Length: 34
Image 1: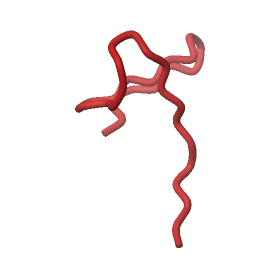
Image 2: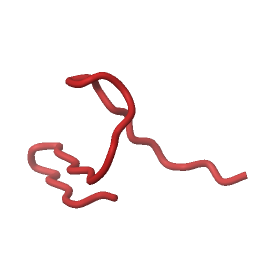
Image 3: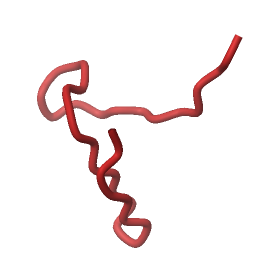
Image 4: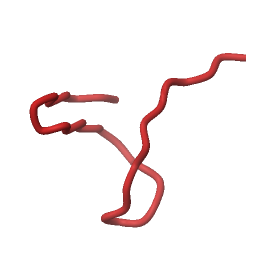
């Protein structure tokens, strides 16, 4: 769930678990519907 978007600071706040290591980068892309 996306909680907040701060365009000025290029910040996306996501609520819930995010896969990967702590401190790692997360790439957010549009979903592809089949």
